[in-house]
Length: 93
Image 1 (tube, rainbow, N blue to C red):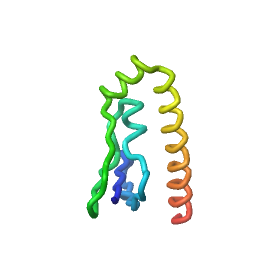
Image 2: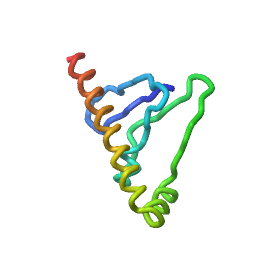
Image 3: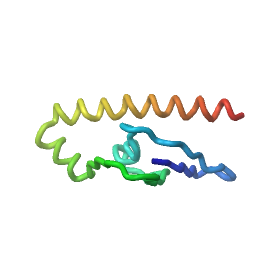
Image 4: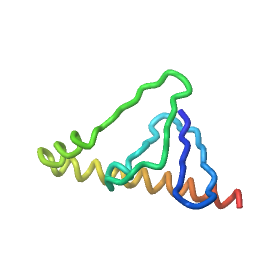
């Protein structure tokens, strides 16, 4: 899979990355209920797991402890991805 990130900054070039198995996409936009900044394209056959916002809302209502743990895991993975992306961008400068 390949992700292309487009940022709302004047003259910012899109950033592309290959995604490996287990990579999350759209998690921060979903949790913050803000517009996404990436498009992900499957380059070959793959399995995609999707959790809709309505399903996440239901999880929060019906199993708040599980939802809290799930969100913490998502944020931990997102922080790791964010750090890698920043390091990659810094090395290009």
